[in-house]
Length: 240
Ligand SMILES: Cc1cc2nc3c(=O)[nH]c(=O)nc-3n(C[C@H](O)[C@H](O)[C@H](O)COP(=O)(O)O)c2cc1C
Image 1 (spheres, rainbow, N blue to C red):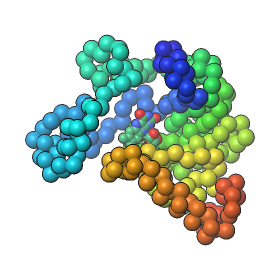
Image 2 (image 1 turned 90 degrees about the horizontal axis):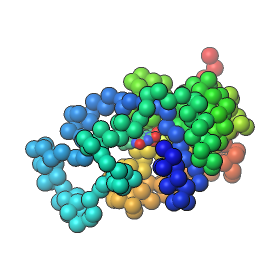
Image 3 (image 1 turned 180 degrees about the vertical axis):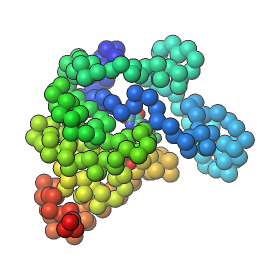
Image 4 (image 1 turned 90 degrees about the vertical axis):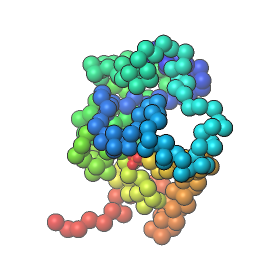
């Protein structure tokens, strides 16, 4: 960890995120169904899928292979997946998080917070940002939607740390809702990956442009001229 942190600093990064909701990978059933492995394994099914996507094949053959650049200089006995799994310690505690925050010395976020207790603990170890997330629903089955956990966490944290929110952001109105419910910033996972898969870097730019233009239009339709004016009263609630 010390080596990774030093390299990140030397590379000019000013903030790091500690993801705390992945002590072990969730049971991603579709990965098995789709023959998804890292590194990719060529099966009849994947080969036939690639065969009907000549653009993908051309790109694959003409561009440098994807590799685990961060770990390329390290000895990886047993392959990448085993190596990465071996890097996750299930004995990590809040003391370790504090150690990481102090060793890093720069901006520090704790990602994967779903409860007010953990949000307070993250603030307690000096986190600059509490990242409300259920890992895009990819970890614990039937965990609550992160948008439902946001208001209570925002109330518990408000003012003592920034709140970053992710989970299900697909449209400008999703951003409005998260900001109105107390997030200071939102993050996206699949939304940019869809763009990346469709058109590479240009696709990512396009995905972000779409979200930005939707957010602007939604704010005009709501009659709010500043992000800070996206307040809780925008959320329509039926009376009980
Ligand atoms: C393919 C994929 C890989 C991901 N890898 C990581 C990861 O390495 N570390 C991490 O903290 N979160 C990871 N996430 C979770 C995202 O950071 C984020 O919490 C989640 O995707 C947000 O939900 P959304 O996809 O609905 O926007 C990954 C998500 C996806 C879809």
